Length: 219
Ligand code: 0O2
Image (cartoon, rainbow, N blue to C red; front, side):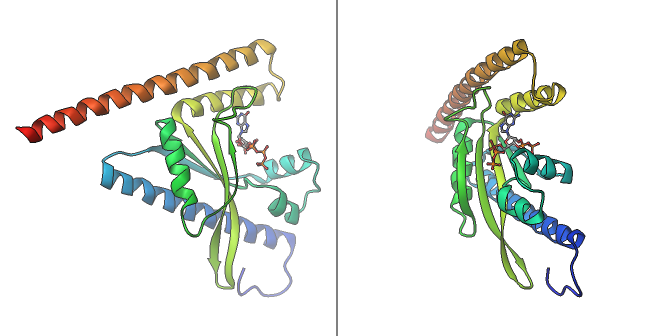
């Protein structure tokens, strides 16, 4: 960071880097909240149910680097990992996911590095979510530093499924019994049905509300 005095050790470098990721998280969070507020102002509709953000723990960083076959170093952590700063946006409906992703991608200071669309192409276990890895500049006194943030966007139903799957994977250390995996896959199919049904129900409700509004103005 700016104004540093003397030689920096790994602990100082670690603190500096986590400061950057934390600042990037706060900036992206603020942008998303503003987008949602604008939506509410203009359309009286909130596409976002809630937002969660987190910094990856040191343990988890080390585990992921090792699992991916990289030496544990601060350079590798910055270069090879994309989700040290992570934001999860939970929406009501699938359509909201693509609208939000589009709005984020259009922000002038956000650069989309890559997208993984696990909604169009779910993982074999049934995992569905839209992932974007972006960079955003964090303005330090020495100048801007492009910093990576992973944004996961999913519906409430997809999130419910993912958190249970995560719990099961953790409990069985990545090797759950086959019956549980089959049940989970069946639940993922139900998530699809639920998302589609909730969407069409909402469309029907909105059409009724619109018709009532038109009737009112005609009176
Ligand atoms: P945690 O505990 O959430 O941090 P990349 O990051 O793109 O270089 P990776 O890790 O293969 O490579 O990316 P991917 O597949 O996009 O997954 C990143 C994150 O998505 C994971 O982070 C999970 O949060 C979530 N995720 C991916 N696949 C699954 C899945 O099958 N089930 C659940 N529940 N979540 C999943 P971490 O680091 O694995 O975990």
